Length: 169
Image 1 (cartoon, rainbow, N blue to C red):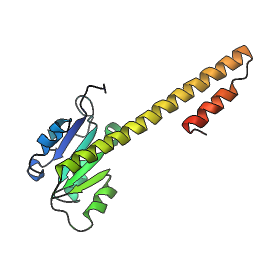
Image 2 (cartoon, one colour):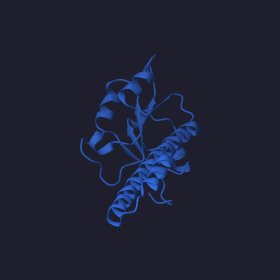
Image 3 (cartoon, helix red, strand yellow):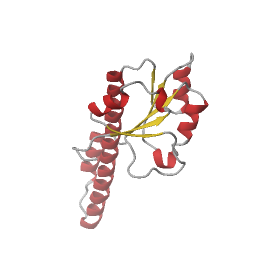
Image 4 (cartoon, rainbow, N blue to C red):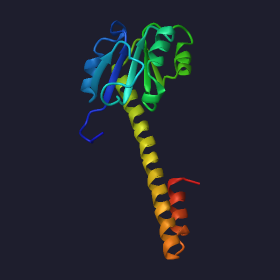
């Protein structure tokens, strides 16, 4: 995603259960908002959203069905934040066990919700940065090993130092 692109948030589930002003708050918070009632089992059309807000009355079969629609083969790494309109006791724990990254219960503070989505995306960016650093370190190690093999120069010290700096064994 480019620096100028707005993060995409998919609103999933029953629109009647969403808090008033949710879409407006997300757009004002700098997000691009799309919506769907249910998703087909396959990959989404177009790019994946950076976050999914799944709305349900509680952590029940409806929420479980929404989450089942997010096929892990295509949706892995996209955090799901559950918005529970009428939660029963234990609903937060049940939603987390179903696979949600975070849960917000009614009444929803829209400023807090936007902050939670931003925090999820920051965490996602940290994971992507670490993944990029790991790929870079692996490529550097392979290149250094190839150079050492072909030139006869020992390059293990710089590779060991780079691995320790980024936290690899």
